[in-house]
Length: 115
Image (cartoon, rainbow, N blue to C red; front, side, top):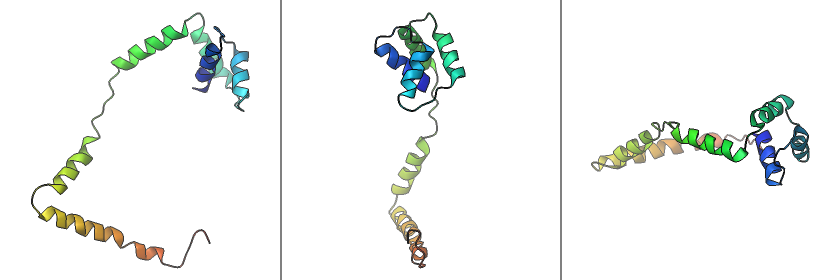
């Protein structure tokens, strides 16, 4: 990504076809050593191409890519079950909070990491 970012910075600066030397100069100005293999591969893949067309093609491919998303609903559903229903659900939540507060005794053991 750092090579792509430097390439785009060079283009934004007015250089329509940045060379390896241009990109190396940008990266070294912020203390980054470029990976010559990755840089050569990037320049080889972009040679003779308009960067705006490459970005547009990438956006089209990303739009068609499935993103999954089946994993986030479980926590919401379990929270809804625990808070709804009869009044007994509140008692269980109170007991769980009491159990969580007990480990404070371990903190009072006289050992302090920062002393």
